[in-house]
Length: 36
Image 1 (cartoon, rainbow, N blue to C red):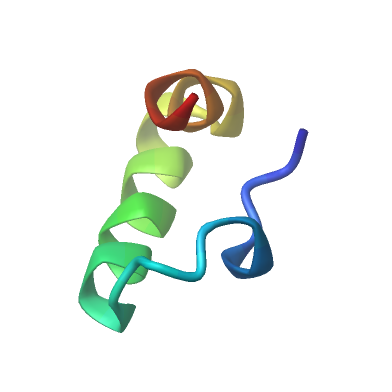
Image 2 (image 1 turned 60 degrees about the vertical axis):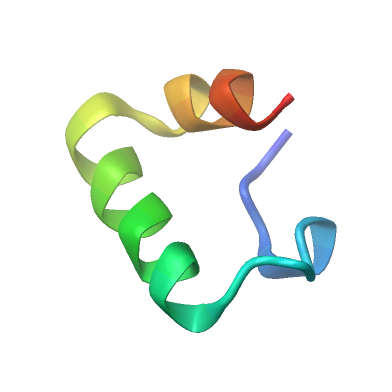
């Protein structure tokens, strides 16, 4: 699963930017697990 904005439309743009920064540091798999 990729972290895409379409999958989480309830997130604000600021939250979305924070997730991208977190994914850059921790990895996309971590963010996906966090959101599921």
